[in-house]
Image 1: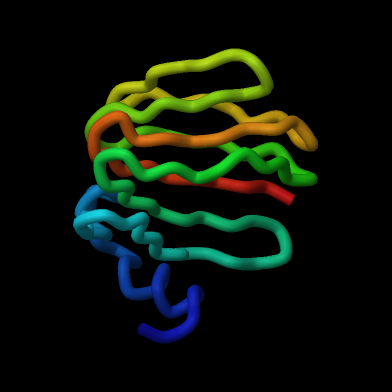
Image 2 (image 1 turned 60 degrees about the vertical axis):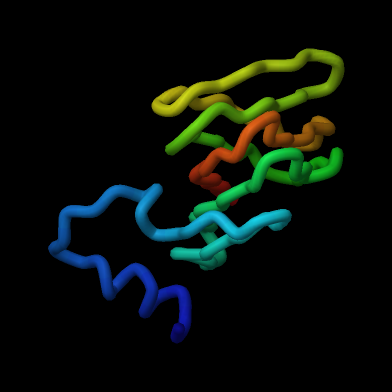
Length: 112
């Protein structure tokens, strides 16, 4: 697929939907990194029904935007159900997790 710079360059000047950049895979979490630079990362994920990104924290703030379906996010002890078009900010250094009560796609943006 080429480097992440190539991934983004392939889309230059095109109208697209982020959700169309990745397909679901049965029983899996699939990701496609569009940008992985010192200043930021931009990754699209597709989570099949029941899949989980286990609790972790990151040293930078990040935004999660649901592109398709409904995702469940836990930040510390608070749980949020997000639908397509909705987003949330993960604070830096705060434990969080993501789960798919049903399959969903998301865009994760981390600014360093």
